[in-house]
Structure formats: C-alpha cells, structure tokens
Length: 419
Image (tube, rainbow, N blue to C red; front, side, top):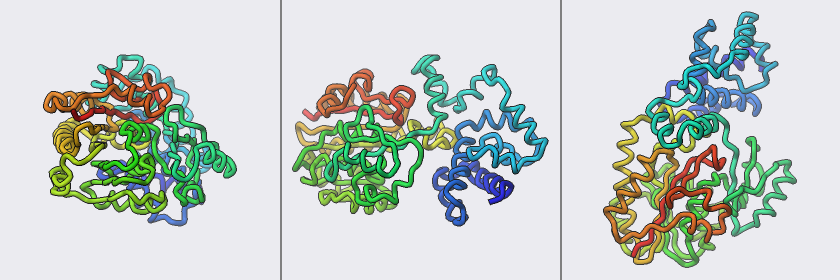
C-alpha cells in the first residue's frame, strides 16, 4: 500500500477510536473487518499507532498544536508505530521538519500531566498511594506495551514441553517468574494458527490472572463457582486444577461473554464446566446453591485500570462517578457470592483495578459485615500453591500486583475461609 494511503487509513481509525464511545479493541476489530485487504504489517502499524495515541494522548495533543493539517494526521505522524522510512514517504518537507523538531525536544521539563498521561482523578490517588518515585515508575510502565502471557493447560501438556514446541515455531517463550503454569512471549505471534493453541494446550492469560486461579486452590471432586466468569480464562484454569472432576459453575450476567467461553471450553478438553447466564447476583440459581459450594471466585466487575498497557482507552472512558457505581456493584456481588459457601469453604475476591476504592475498601467493608469469614494471608496461600517469591506479591495480607514491579497487569485479591 502507498504510504499516503496507509497514513490516511490511520487518520480514519484514529477518528473512530478517539470518540471514546466504545472499547478501543472493538473499534479496531470493526475497522479491520471493513478493510479486509490490509496485510499483517499494515494492521500492526495502524493498531499500534492508535494505541500509542491513547496511551499518550495529552502529550501528543500538546505537540500536535504546533503542526498544521488535520489533527488526526498530526497525531498519527507523532505516534507512528510502523516503519519510519515508510512514514517519511507520506510526509511533506514541512511535516518532516516539524516531526524532527518535536522528536528533538527535551520532554523532562513539561508539566507532570503531560508526562504521566493520566487523568487527574486517577493520578492523584495513585501518587498518594505509591509516593513520587513509585508513581512515576508505574506511569512509565503503563505507557508501554504489555507482553503476551500464556497459561499451559497441564491436563494436556507440561510447561517445558509447550515451551519447546513454541521454540520450534520460532516463538521465544520464557517461563513466567511467579506462575508455575505460565509462559511469556514478547511481540504478537499468530498463535491461533498453531496446533498447540487450536488443540487447547495453551491459552492466552496474564500471569496475574493465573495467580488468582491458584489462590482459590480448587481440588478434585469439589463444587466450585466462578461467579463473574466472563470469557472464562480463569474458569479454564480452575477446571484444569480440578483435573476435570467435580462441578465447576461459570456464572455471568452476559450471555455474549459466556458465548466466548464455548470455543475455548471445547479446545480445553474440560467436561466439568457448567456455564450459566444469570440475571443478577440474587438469581434463583444462586439461591439454590446456597451453602453447598466449596470454593467461590469473585473476579468482580471493575474499572480495569490495571490493564492500561493493553486497554489505554479505559483511563479516558472511566470516571470517579463510574468508580462509585462500581463500588456498590462490587459490594453487592461479593455479599451474594459469599452465601454460596459451606463451612470451611474458600472465597476469593479479585479485581484488575489499581485503586484502593475497588480493592482494600471493599474487602475491609465485607469483613466488617461478615465476621464468619476469616481472612487468610495471601503470601501463605500463594506459597502453598507453589508460587515463587510469594511475599513480593503481597501487601498487608492481600495480593497486590503492579505492572512496574511485577510485569503483570495490576491485580488485587483477598482470600477468606468461612468458619
């Protein structure tokens, strides 16, 4: 494709993405369905340029003011993630000079909001929580691309065996430092074309998400509930831990998300999973199972702010008001899920949020209202699950994962046992 044509397409995609009225990944997917003739490199350049703009929108908008031409074109030029020589073929001499001037600027003296590229309502609590040094390390890490983590389905294959198979396919997969069933890949290889993927021996799942499944410690023959199953990444990990025995209920209010579980479930070889759409957290299906369940995982609906490396649009689409609405939902869901557990049962509450408001505050309020639940120390739970370096993953008895410290998505989890 001619450089001018590809840059024009980048502008078109940016116009759609920057409306911020839908998740960026769905907008990008819809765009590529519309432009089916695009090659893999062209898709990569367009998608990553759009995500680069979302990550650093305030900074790039600041620099774009000094240029000329349509705003989307200036943003695309500044954020371009394709071949730089190819890009120059689409630029006028004036644009080339402008780009060189911007790239040569010292950015260290710019206002903080232009350097951390976070909305103030999010930057303020994170700065207070972490302190100056750690905050800036976090901000820098969230403006980078995340690696691709894989979970090995140990029902079908050993981790080292999966690593060798990927190596034979010219994919360098390293062992994840914490999860005993994880592999980490840099870049975006076409995994969906490999037999190891289509046969269900590996699944895409962030290492932090894998640790949540390990914390539940689901056993053979138990009754287990994944209360907010979504597309089922943790459901599949739990089913594997149960060695395909017992009953594993995958509940979610979204039939669309549960539908995404079906092909993954078919690949996995699991037959102990029972997906079920519920109308709300007080659904009759929940009431019928009250007091009968051994283990419950509540990966609650949340802001998703721990996933900004993958979903940078969330920081512009979320708000303080939305967080407050989520808190009410999280509180109600956790209380309802707790009713399922029998005496001695284990409950795990988790989010992929960075904010205390969705994490510690919810957990502490639950404990105050439910004295029959005793909190377990997260580091001890992780150590028993054969997680290396468990103490480095916890704060004040909770699991607390940070992108800049642990190279995972941001995750929180609290673990309780019903007395």
